[in-house]
Amino acid sequence: ANDFDSDSICANVDSCPADPENDADSDAICVPDDVCGYDPEHDKDSDFICGDVDSCPGDAGNDIDSDLICRDVDSCHLDAENDADGDLTCGELDDCPYDAENDADGDTLCGDIDSCSYDSENDADVDTVCGDVDSCAYDAENDADGDGVCGDVDSCPYDAENDADGDGVCGNVDSCQYDAENDADGDLMCGDQDSCAY
Image (cartoon, rainbow, N blue to C red; front, side, top):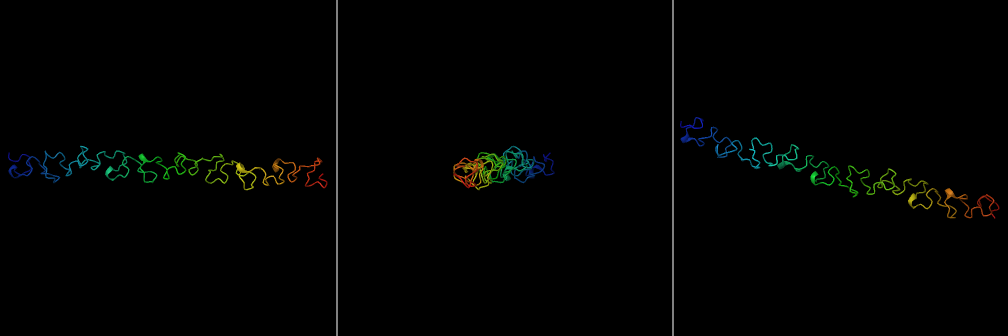
């Protein structure tokens, strides 16, 4: 009758007379006063789950992002992918969670979905070549006449000689490409080939 907790230690000499395990967690608090009898830190994260049965004893949210990493050791505790793009910005704060460069060209399209991730105009001339690698970013034909002058700034985009005779008519539509007077005598022979040009 003098051993209330049946631990074979008489109550008058039992440091925990109502605790059969005699303060199992060695925290100097005996059951029933110790609500976490096997947790010496007494539910340190205050989530009402004793540390010995708490999957995250130092995380009151108990791994809120469900990535199997407790908050006290999870660098991105609200990001289940833990900074997927490795840019040191957690996903829930990252405007571009899958783009480490965070929209490098500033066109409001993240690199992972931007077909031209380094071209803010996204292939302005629609030639399927992004502006950052397109030698003629505003010429869909990319210097069709091969004269080294892009079509958007080439006065004669289809004339590699750019109006060789200087008559204001581009060679590709000039009936006399090398005759500035365009057959002055009207004999259907261009001046550069006509022995009697006049």
